[in-house]
Image (cartoon, rainbow, N blue to C red; front, side, top):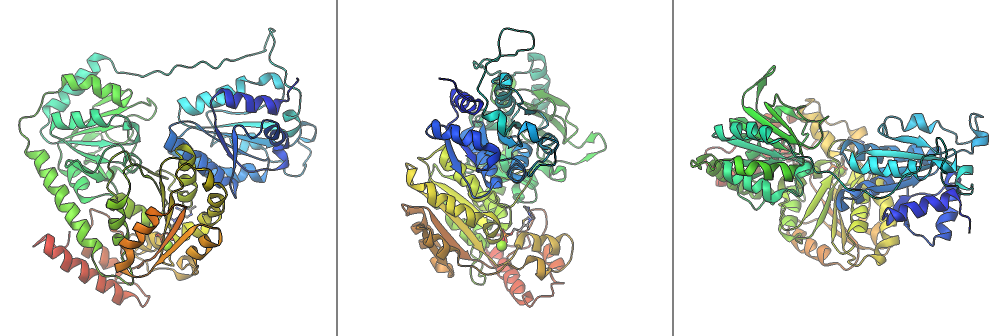
Length: 601
Ligand SMILES: Cc1ncc(C[n+]2csc(CCOP(=O)(O)OP(=O)(O)O)c2C)c(N)n1
Ligand SMILES: [Mg+2]
C-alpha cells in the first residue's frame, strides 16, 4: 500500500522510538493529523491548550526522560506560539524537535492566509538545524538529522513541511545523483580528555587546600564520581539550579544552590576557597564565583564540560577539560591525592548544618496568613523519594532552591536560563509522560497559574486516568502579587511596588480544579499546612493545593544581610510596612535563637 509523506514521518518517529508528540491541531498539519488517525495515534498525540504548552511539555519530557522531546503545530499562529517553549529548551540545552506545517507550496509567497516565513522565524531558535521539506525524497534524511542534531547537541531543531507535501505519496531517495538516504543506527561518543591534560588538572587540584566544586546538570549521572572527588579533595560542593538534583542534599558537604537564589554556605564556599573545580555547569552569575581581576583569577580553577564551545566562558580557568563528566572524573580520580587536612570540609559541614537551622527558623516566622517558607519547609521532608519536581519562575523558585532537600532518586528542574513563567505545570505533564509511574509536583505562583497553569489543568484532567500512578500535585502560592518582581523592584531597583502591574486578581484555583474532577485544597492557616500537604500527597488523583501566602516575606539573596534588604524596602508606599516590620522582627528573634550574636545573617 502506498503511504503519504505524513505516514512516513510518523513511521520514522516510531522507528526512532518516539512515544509521544506534544502538539496542537490546525490545517497546516492536516496531512499529519489524518496520518495519525490511520496510525491509530502512534506515536501518541498529546494535546495541550496552547502550542507554548506543547513545547514546554516536550521540554519537560526531555528533561525528565533524557530523551529527545517532539512537538508539533500548525503553520502561522501555531508555529509562533511554540517559540517561548522552544527557546526554553534551547537555552537549557535540551533536545527538542519541532515539526510544523506551512502553507501549500502553490500558495507560497502569495500573501496567503497564515503564511509566515517560518525559515526566518525559526532561524534563531533552531539555528543548528531548520529545514523545509519540499519533496518526499528529502526524507528520511531531514527528519533523521533533526533528531540526531537535537539529541547530540542538546538543542532545538525544526522541520517545516508544507501542507500539500504532507499529502504527497512518499517516494524514498533512489540510487541517483543528489538523492540522499540516511539510516537509523547510532552509537554515542563519550569524550575523555588526554591523560596529560588530566594530569595538569590533578596537579592543580592536589596543590589546593580549600577546594570548592560547582556542579550543574552536565554532572547528572556522575554523582558517585563527584562524591569521590569531593572526598579525596576534602571539598565542598555547590549546585547550579539546573543541577540541583545531581547530588543529595543529605550529604553534609553539599552546600545547596548557588547564586541569587542560592544558599549562604555556597556563597561562603566560593568566596573563601583557594581552588575551584566546575563540572558540567555554565552558571552565568560570575559574581557568585571566586573573585577575579581582569584575566587574573583569585583562585586556581579547572572546568570540565562536554561542550568545547561553552567551556572556559565564566571564569579565567587554568585548565579546561572537554569531556563527559563521569568519564573525565573517573580518569581524574586515580591522579588525585587524598588531603590529610580535613578542616576545610569540616568548616563547610558546619556552615551547612547552621544553614539548615536558619532555614527551619525562617520557616517558623509568623506571617499573614502563611509564610511561604513554611510551605516549602513542610513539603520537603514529605516528598516521596522518587518525586519529580518542576518549579516555575517566581518567588517559589527561591523557596524550591533553598528549602527543598533532594534525596533518593528525586528529580527536579525549572526554566534555568530563560527563567520563563508558566513552565511549571506543562513540565509536570511532560514528566508524567516520561515516567507515568512516578509522582510529579509543580510548584507555581498565582501569576504563573493564571498565565498557563489553569489551562493546563484541563490537559491534566484529560490524561491523568491513563497514568499508572495518578499522583500529580500542583501547588499554588496565592499571594495575589507578582511577588518576585515586587521584591526585585524593591531590593534591586530601590523602587516601591507598582500595583497596577503587580497586583493579581483573586481566584478560586482549588474550585477550578474540582470543577475538572481533580482534587482541590485551599489552605489559609499556618497550622493546616502540614496536614494539607499530607492530603495532597496521598491523593489518588491530580490535586491542586493552594496556600494563601504573605507577599511580605522577602526572597533575600544569600550575600545580603537582612538589614541591607530591608533598607530598600523601607521606602515601600503600600500599607504593608507594618507587616514587613513584623516579619523582620520575627526573623531576627528566630535567628537570635539559632545564631546568637549574628542575627542579621
Ligand atoms: C513569561 C514571563 N513573563 C514575565 C516574567 C518576569 N517575572 C519573573 S517572576 C515574575 C512574577 C511571578 O509571579 P507569580 O507567578 O505570582 O509568583 P510569585 O513571585 O508571586 O511567587 C515575573 C512577572 C518572566 N520571567 N516570564
Ligand atoms: Mg504571586
